[in-house]
View 1: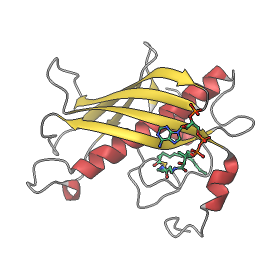
View 2: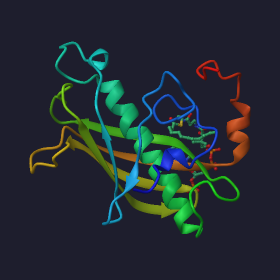
View 3: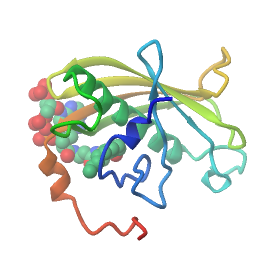
View 4: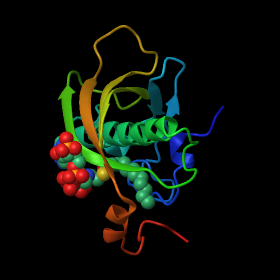
Length: 169
Ligand SMILES: CCCCCCCCCCCC(=O)SCCNC(=O)CCNC(=O)[C@H](O)C(C)(C)COP(=O)(O)OP(=O)(O)OC[C@H]1O[C@@H](n2cnc3c(N)ncnc32)[C@H](O)[C@@H]1OP(=O)(O)O
């Protein structure tokens, strides 16, 4: 199996997808044969909503956000004809995130996110994403989202850099 997108992107302390964040969700994204990308995640009991059996909506937003932004970066590297993480870094951030929460997401089973790049226009990349049962049973997704990823220069990251308290030595 090829490495996850996140394992090829250096210096990433993101709470959702950064391998360098010891307290984070550490989600992992991969290409599928049809050109979409997928991420399987097993929710943790403390990530619950009010009822303990369902996943918190903010956690869902983080999963969608990070899976889609990492997909945007992976797609941009592919468009540039490079392996992820090779050469001049390509960074995207979230400009917009619109989510429809369609059904409660069970917390006691693995879930799957599937994202597709819908459009690339200059610095902007639009993606769609569905969150569903890991078996991809033909039922209503738990959530559906669109996201606008915006390419930023590497100094966007430097402006925001503070000592990484989330990285344990
Ligand atoms: C080591 C690290 C590891 C990195 C690993 C990273 C993994 C992170 C995964 C999680 C992702 C996050 O949570 S990121 C954190 C959450 N997001 C943020 O904090 C972003 C905060 N916002 C910003 O910094 C800024 O607003 C930007 C960069 C999004 C846009 O700045 P800007 O100055 O307006 O950009 P600019 O180049 O002028 O605009 C480019 C084009 O995008 C459009 N545009 C600009 N903003 C938006 C917007 N919000 N929604 C729609 N469209 C927009 C403009 O109209 C323009 O369109 P046109 O004229 O070209 O048509």
